[in-house]
Structure formats: C-alpha cells, structure tokens
Amino acid sequence: MTPAEAASLPMLFAGLAGGYLLGAIPFGLIFTRLAGLGDVRAIGSGNIGATNVLRTGRKGLAAATLLGDALKGTVAVLAGLHFGLEPALAAGLGAFLGHLFPVWLGFKGGKGVATFLGVLLALSPVGLLAFAAIWLGLAFGFRYSSLAALAASAATPVVLWALGQPGVAWLFLLLAALLWWKHAPNIRRLRAGTEGRIGQKG
Image (spheres, rainbow, N blue to C red):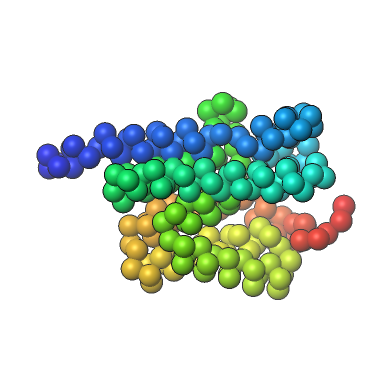
C-alpha cells in the first residue's frame, strides 16, 4: 500500500460510516408512527419500505417513504463527492447497507430499491434513466414490480460500464447482488407463480 492509499483510508471509512448512518434512518417506520399508525413492521410483509407502507392505505406516506429512502442515498453520495469519487462510492455503499441492515432495528431493514435509485441518481443520472426505462417496460409488460426491479438492477452495472463508469459499475454490481439476495422471497414467489401483480387486489 502506497502512502497516498494509506492516507485515503480514513476518508473511505468516514464515507462508509457516514453513509451507513444516513441509510439507517428508517423513514417508513418514522412516518407511520408520526401518523399514528403504529409499527409498520406489524403489517403486511413486515418491511419498512414504501411498498409495505402503502399497505396502510396512506399513499402520501408511501410516497414520502420512497422519497426519503431514495434521498438518503443521494445525499450520502453528494456529500462524499466533495472529497472525491472513491469516498462517494464508499458513502453510497454505506447508505445502501444502512438501509438493508439498520443497527437501530436489529439489522432488519428494507429491500433497497429506493436507496439503490438514490445512489444511482447521484452517480449517474443517465444510468437512472436506463433503469427507469427497463423498469417501466417490464412493469407494463408483465405487471410484476419485483421482476422489473430485479431485471433493471441487474442491467444497471452493464449500462454503467457502457457509459464509461467502471468504478461506479463495480459498486452497482455489488448493490444489485445484495438487492437480489434481499428479494429472495419475491424470486421464490415469481418462480411459483404466486407473486402479486401490480394493481392486483387481495
């Protein structure tokens, strides 16, 4: 390790730690409790993300959760970018890990799609547009939100490499793998044909 690399390690750890603390803010839980709806983990899938918040019937709260979960990734990366790309990548990873494994909730967090998008917005707006195009095409074609998110996340590293952002692509390869792992129950339901479709009642 060169002296320059050794000097950069504290900055990387600071980015990772700061990103984690931002990512670990459980907006879904906070918003539902402030609205007097109790613990969102007690309903539906038990998840703290926007999809489960929507099961309360409060679309505004779900939208606020989606925005909050995305922006914590965006803010973490933008803060890191003040110190360079590598601290920004570390902050993005930290935010994603914080959302998936928040220390305040026994390391049981969300599935990561919104935070994935927030990090992507800060690092590659064009990559975000590609994600959105893939998601929309598959969501309208097959009516499975989870399938669309899984496919779009898997395509994201390829898109980023094509855009000439290899460092960012490596980060999103890791984030996509974690996102797929967190979606294991959805993948099992997709294979069994029991996954709920967009707009499906009951």
